[in-house]
Image (cartoon, rainbow, N blue to C red; front, side):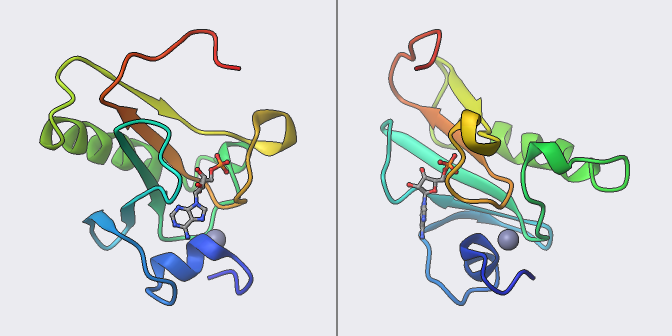
Length: 114
Ligand code: AMP
Ligand code: ZN
């Protein structure tokens, strides 16, 4: 756990969150500032900074996160589709430096993103 990391604190239960799914490796919780009718963040409990820090040693968690995303999308009724986004770094618009995937759905999305 990285002591000054908000999402590590959420994963450890030190900061409350509105949970959508949890297992020993990942946590999914509702975004505080939802950008779509369904907006869930899925994070590894282990601290990984962003997509830029994925390595052969830690990449299995990404596959697991996508399995959880598919399950949540089905559970939340996103049969018309959904979007998964992971912002990395300044140009990517990342504001919390702990790897997370936004699961967005319940409305039609634009492309390209702004
Ligand atoms: P990003 O800008 O891609 O780094 O996404 C960070 C997301 O975390 C934003 O959508 C925020 O609204 C969300 N967020 C920040 N703090 C919290 C929190 N304590 N609980 C839930 N969502 C949060
Ligand atoms: Zn962290």
